[in-house]
Length: 76
Image (cartoon, rainbow, N blue to C red; front, side):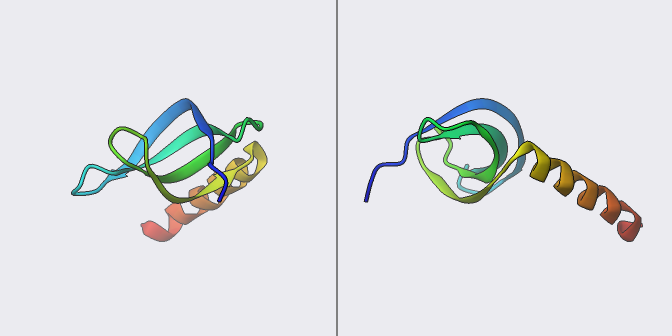
């Protein structure tokens, strides 16, 4: 299997942290020297290992924001 190359261009924030130090993060990541995308996934403390995640374009992230904002009314 080919090695996956990545570069975290911008760390936007931590969503949660597990008991072993791994954190679920929202970052802007370039995968295999491609255009960076927004990325949600678990990362090891030194960011050398990662879990499965999802990458989103700007438009997809904006759509997700709209969906999440709509959930605010349901939570109350």
